[in-house]
Amino acid sequence: MSAQAQMRAMLDQLMGTGRDGDTMRQRIKFTDDRVCKSHLLDSCPHDILSGTRMDLGECAKVHDLALRADFEIASKEREYFFELDAAEHLQSFIADCDRRTELAKKRLAETQDEISAEVDAKAERVHELNEEIGKL
Image 1 (tube, rainbow, N blue to C red):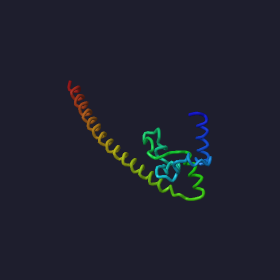
Image 2: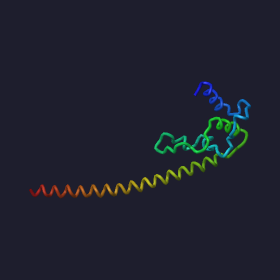
Image 3: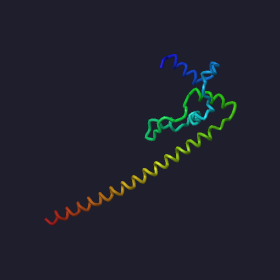
Image 4: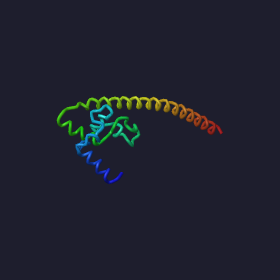
């Protein structure tokens, strides 16, 4: 990215996309359904968990820092109630995580049962070998 593009991105982030009064540049508004409302509130699980074991990959919705700046400016004048959308998004994510955790616990319990049976069989075999050695 060129220095000019970096400066443009930083100004967009700081002042919003409409900073120049250029309406052609701003094709999408933060109220659009394609924009991630959780990202506007800085709570998108896709961003928060990137690089962790629970990494979800890229969010299907638009994540743009300039739109976040636009939202922050506009939210001072009016309430948009995006917190409700973000809460629903987080609730669905939490439910998905809980489901994955339960599946992992079930698999672990099954594996532990198999391992316990195997350990018991080996312990029994060791006991038998000790008895044979004792008879000699």
